Length: 355
Image (cartoon, rainbow, N blue to C red; front, side, top):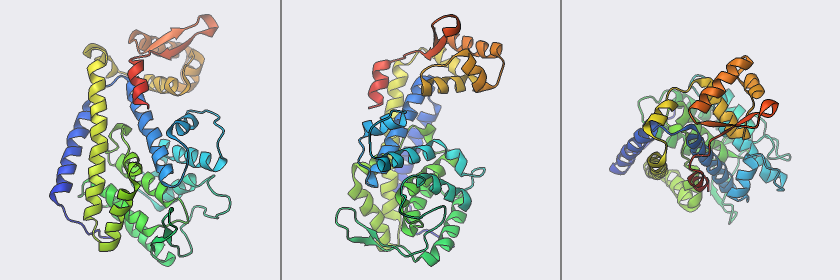
């Protein structure tokens, strides 16, 4: 049975305390839907870029952003597929858990999506590796560490998944950090273990309510200093003790979430008046779907709203009219050419945040 070895030292405890403080401020903040969506999209793009870059993808963050926003950027198919496949997984995390539980079947599904179009030469499929492998340094081609034999992978993964689903007495932050390391130590697949480990980490935080509105990403911290990331992992390889790794993990979690807290607080100081923010709190699910649709496609018509919400044309009109009254959307055109767009709130800041 999997049983991680680590100690609760002052650094880890202080980091968790700081994370909880920032998390409380962020989760209680009320941002208008457009700014909420902006922060989510910023974190999403950063996460996809950083995670694929760590694995050797050469695309810049601007190129990644264009791809994820639907641009037909002229790039190599392999690097494009790495971005698009990983982006798909991050936007569909709900598909990969069963009422908050991680299962082998859904984990294999997630891996299958991450590697769907990545390599045509390596037969991976939705299964664990069936050969022994060495993990080499990308720059020097030297062996960095040797994962367990392929014969032990199914049992090790079964133990890890069982531990994840029965770790309710440990902070979700530590659970995510422990699983991130242990997954990489096992290296259960032929390729893309790094991306799968990061996606699994996000999934655990998501299912345990610690994705913090999807405003933040840990991957950016790893990518900013890859050597520090690898050295922290190696410390656990060398000592079989995860304490130093968890110090690193919680420190970078704190750095990331503190930055998000600062963004949120800055946005709150220039957001609409409290009365207008109060209006946001009474938005219905259908109205939120409309806002998300416009955020993704730029505009929406009454007919598109009817199809999106599966309601009558009159009911669609009423939802759109309510959002207009709240000054969240604006009507453009006339007659059959009428469409609706989001109000451009704090456009200069919104663009700055997306950089």
